[in-house]
Image 1 (cartoon, rainbow, N blue to C red):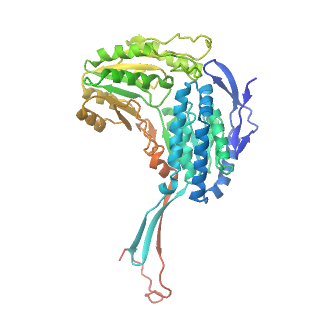
Image 2 (image 1 turned 180 degrees about the horizontal axis):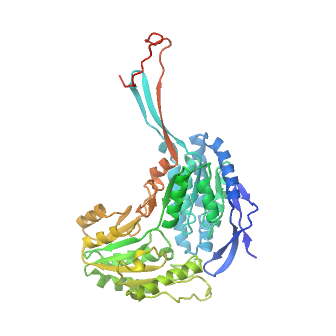
Image 3 (image 1 turned 30 degrees about the vertical axis):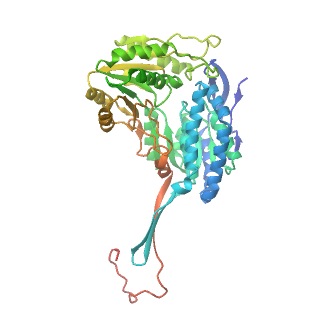
Length: 503
């Protein structure tokens, strides 16, 4: 019988009377590996209460205390990276090396947060007026919530909670119910690192838990990563209830290949960026825009590389791509290949029907390549979130820029070219939040911010970097005068009502 996972609240595994359960699958076998409780609104309210109580003391912890805990947590995550990766493989399905990379990119934000004493420094101005000084400071918000997706169950939460906690907030994480175990393990590592009980909490659930967090009076801010429809719902609901929100939505990322590009380099990049993690990345390349006649050379080069890809369980050290996360998602993604063919695209490589010996019941779909896709086709319009790569052919660089800019998403894009002039033109004119030049997946480092434009972001603040520090704090400006005792010059009853100005 599959085991039941617990919430992690107040520094311990925590069970409540939640009657509803969700199934967690091993995508490589198709079998249920465990069950997860789906929290009711009343359970969420109790978790928020625990976090709110912890905030009353954690907010006054010294920067030195916070930094010591962060360094200890960083050391523990580093020491347990293989264990954390194994949990990701078991429930998400990505291969082990990919899971290790996810842990590393999350760990980089923890390391960035270790510098919080510098990041929270305010400004100070002396003598803004006669005998008056003024300075700024930033203070924590309170209880903040993170609602995170299945595709990066370790990295995306670690893009949020290290900075939130370092800034003096307490955190409630609602991970995806599809792969929740790694979040609980991270909570245990926080406790081992010395984080006070209640500062970091994990509550499992579905939409009922999400809506309870979005409307909870004591939740001050919400960070979200997921699909655009849900991001829009999160943003609208939470802001209506007075909360600060950063809601990252979907993506349709294009790789533009100009005629002067190194075709072999571009083909390598397209395959890696399209089929890594089975395409279940918000920064995956799902459309190649071939400019001029470069498509005639590029498509065969991509197809040849796809033929050599090894698909198998994430525990197979030779596997380069694993299964999709659920059977329903696998079937949805495969449906786009059929729709693309019906709409006139050429299916160059068809990964439907793939089976893996010894794991025939896994959620398998091989890499797929469609050529002569047009912008009006569903395979180009929609975020597919799977191992399906489309090739759209256009005549000029200007046509490529117009095509990308016309898309409602604006998360990431890349251009491959040997021309510095054309690369500069692209990065200036493209209407997308993250741009790569001969780099297919332009995910910024922890000290820069991550976020998109248009329907890829609701709210005006990106994730991590200094924007993350500002999101999890609010500013305060102090203006102070310390006059000499009895130094007043105005006669009694003659106080000036003029608007104060500097002098």
